[in-house]
Amino acid sequence: MSKLAGKVAVVTGASKGIGAAIATALAAEGAAVVVNYASSQEAADKVVAGITASGGKAIAVRGDVSKQAEAQAIIDTAVKQFGRLDILVNNSGVYQFAPLEEITEDDFHRHFNINVLGLLLTTQAAAKHMGEGGSVINIGSLVTRIVPPGSAVYTGTKGAVDAITGVLSRELGPRKIRVNAINPGMVETEGTHAAGFIGSDFHSSAAAQTPLGRIGQPGDIASIAVFLASDDAGWLTGEQLFAAGGAR
Image 1: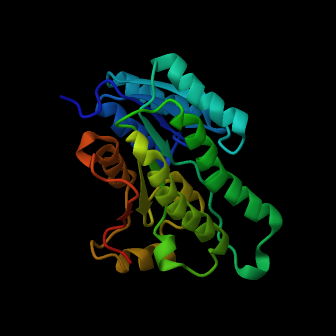
Image 2: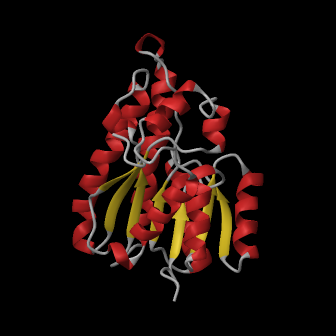
């Protein structure tokens, strides 16, 4: 029997990359999935089409998680469409590296609004509908452990994600809702290709410093999300799972 049969999941930022892989993997295990996107409707529709073609259930829902009304609407749509909510994957995020002297107010607020405030607003909306067995999965990053130069703002947001994961695990624990984080290392996605990371010296260095000898693929992260969403992880909460092939 599928691990997530009868469950309903919302995956934010799920039109591409890690989010798309997680949405697809959750659906393959039986969950009905809301594929959230902020601007890439065509890409989100493609993810939904792939899920439904394989016999799964999914819908695409637009919404900017950094705006309270839109975050609430994403969750409300999931509950209205599928009748419940069991799993939330807070995957929406942006990243841009810049040295200290180039950090701007706009850059700071864009990162924190989406990566941190968005996570809080979406979880706030989702928690109202979750009950025992609910699972919140936050996507953090290996950067909080390796603290690379030029990443002060981005790493700051992911440090906040780590801390919030712990806090919310304690707040929601009495309701038997689990809250965990997956902290990936470098992953090959449309975003890392667009940023010029793939094929760069940074890519080569990341692979060389990874005991398993390569950077990650979206599926590497998606399988961990399935585990955290399932009853197999029923005794895990407040954890940060570093999914980086052993990189430290």
